[in-house]
Length: 166
Length: 166
DNA sequence: ATAGGATTGTTCGAAATTGAACCAGCCTCG
DNA sequence: CGAGGCTGGTTCAATTTCGAACAATCCTAT
Image (cartoon, rainbow over all chains, first blue to last red):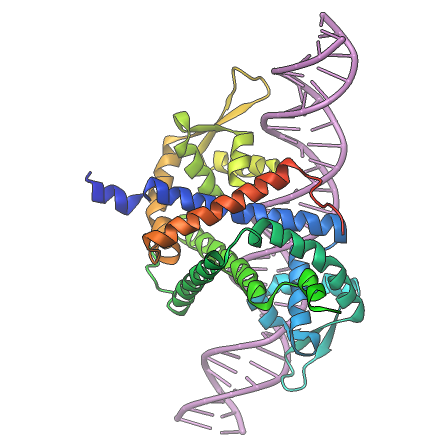
């Protein structure tokens, strides 16, 4: 088989290394954050993410589906976690007036408090591990990279039949 | 509270956006790959990763612990997945001579075949979503970013008491 | 040698995630 | 209208993951 054949089948070694390292770094980051949150604050990273997004939202509330979208998990997982958070008293469900199917999830004062207690811990971790060593050029570059990746993913989502087989 | 106070507690909005997008992109990538592999090739991304690493290793084999390290998951998860792969006939366990505790996991011919069938599919996906739009500068920059993140993580692992509280 | 500590891999129970199935309410077009 | 399709959310079984506990083996320092 020719060189082009190899190229089409496998990644160039250096490129492959980048991809591998990407996977490792993301997993390790996730793991670190998760562990820290659980040990020090008794919540999962997904739970923390939910609290963050709610705090960000208008009225400190959000719809289930939107939550699932920004968190990037299955809807059923959101239902599960919102139940947990609700049992913990960090979150409340509210009926939605404009759409009788919908439910709003709203941060409770206790939820906000818990978030504000946890945030410094994990934000400093994110800074140390992820952001502190970036100079301006680098963070601009990273922003651009994330942009193209995001666009590529959008494109694939929009057109699901994007080379579906093999 | 002053501006510095805010800075120390929350991320600057733009920086926060980068971090958020990073989380979303990584999750979406993972999700895409996983789905594609399951639908077209009947294996998980973790299982695929295991096959890849084994194919890479000397003699197409690897120790359990090393596998857990490169895949970045709990040891018990590796045990679980190696059992599955072994039931599928894609992988074999072998006793380790030099260390009686150890076990080697070895790719079977069927495993190699399965990997070679799946690889083009997911590699082209990785290219399309992740790599194709990177010019030389960017991929060099990405490599450097991954390097610093990796070093930061190593540093934290080496020194677990790295600001443990909050 | 040998005791103490570290490492290897498995087992176990608990928790999380997923996709499919499902019900309701919405919305559009004939 | 009102029938069909779409969307929002929940339920359910199956899969996966995790960490802690454990047993076996290795290694090191006395």
